[in-house]
Image (tube, rainbow, N blue to C red; front, side, top):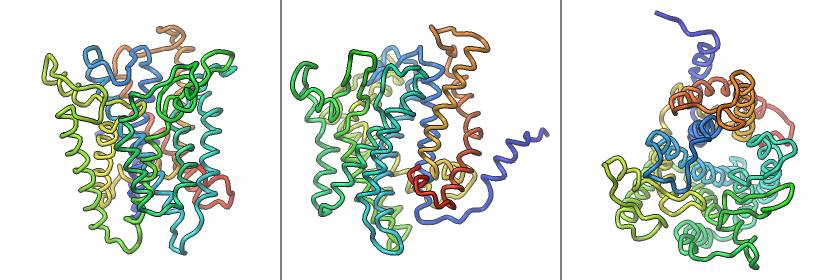
Length: 396
């Protein structure tokens, strides 16, 4: 019987150590889980970029292995934004009693926007000087946190109306559009339509994640916060999330099955059962359609209900990642950038200036190999974050 290498054995032994499960441990676990899934999509974008996927994906031309790898990543952004709102409520309601959250949310939101414009945008391209700023998930989380800094003071009934209206109603705004030379184009591009804010010049700026529906998601996360109050029994919380998850997926089945509402691209029967299933599961991400959000949040809520009582190697590993989310995000992007550059130096470029794999199998292998590589620095930073008195560290 072969024995694991020292780093692998150390990783397994460290992650498998018993750890006390708190009522909020599932938040770090779920956040870490979606970050691990996100890593798969980003490895694909690093080493399989020559096989482009659209939004929604072209079912007729997209290989199933790419389609379902991309589909798995759909869960990431909605759950991360929802958990950000939930965590914000927990920050505002510690065991010692309520405390103001507006300043923390606004400052952290501004920090995330600044990081997207600088550190994160450079990590995606490696261009010196930076030629295009892609405003993506970190940008939209930052703006959503700034919005929540203002909105969280409203009565809960008003917040429910805002959150549900934005999540369920923003598809009604799809017919509205502005041309680049029209008044309102810039604002609508930020709020609802994906496109370039600055299309010409030495530095281009593109909005990849329109803001409006994400404000709805973060508000719903805030509203879910009381489910994690100490007075709520764990079985009741898990039951609520299970009902929310299954209810979301059931509503998705009805809306998508009838092509009634919630997605701009109707599904259609394909040449095979597989292609038909791909068409049914093909949702718009930019901006996220209602069907996209029902799919992602439905799976996420169900996962929270089922995983909360589970304490094993996998959940503890995910919780470690979830305890250092911004650190993980930045480190994994730069790790992938360096790997792409080193591979080109070692074996040469085979797709323009980049190196790309010939199939998805190596993408999956690299993804799995990077999980333990990222574990150790994330564990060290998470431990540092829990013990340090340095103020800025808490924002990561």
